[in-house]
Image (tube, rainbow, N blue to C red; front, top):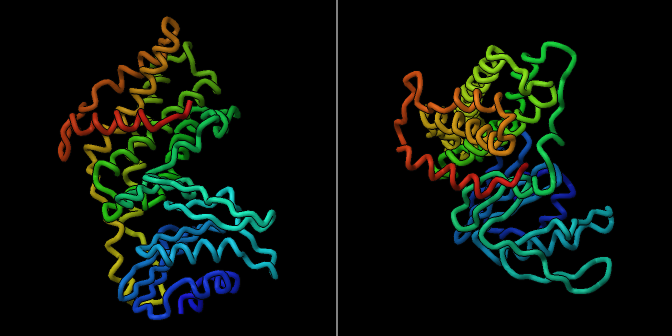
Length: 333
């Protein structure tokens, strides 16, 4: 049964009786280096159970299984003092459970179209995955930016830009064409660079790169940004191509094509440069007269099709629709 090949003794207790005994396929794998997964198939239903550290997610075609799952977790393991955090529990239907502390029945928080989990946002209608930027509400980009002032500021800035995008590029669920449609993949890539550009602005301010920056320094920043776009695209492509599944079943070999990646370099180039340009344009509006640095950088990023990198798989209208959608979902300041 599932629990015999799952993660450990606690999970074996928690999930005992959750899944049907007549499971025909049980596949264990991983969706990333820190995420374990179990796929369970019966004659009538399919279930996907994921875990990142101590956060569990069940995606199931059976509401009865889902109800058993949430009730089991809510009961916990009193003998081991294992309990779930009711404030962080979510379902996409209405259900009330007994509060183990008060003994009262309380409704579990419900999500309708979008389900947040571990920094990701899952569309319950399509199962597409994007980043949950709502978790940035009430915070500032500079809160997570470590600024180096010990010399070699330029090289440190170039390295930090890659550090800004690396965590998102390593999340294969965001860029798999077997999970997301191409417009969602473009959105995830674009929002990655919106966040990178916003952090770059604060980093530049922190190292004193403001109005006194020389043309040569600004050209270096521009070249570093372009290099970061190429780095991100290459890293994602590599993760998609060389991604692997840990498994206890040979059936999982059929899942190796899970990591297909269909974002073209031309689209990635356009979206990345547009993200930097948009952020610097916003800075110009905020700073007005004292925006020389931003104006020069904005001009450098203004021609999204320069150097022979045109738009191939998408029209400019399609890409602009992606940017408009991204602006509506991006709350970070």
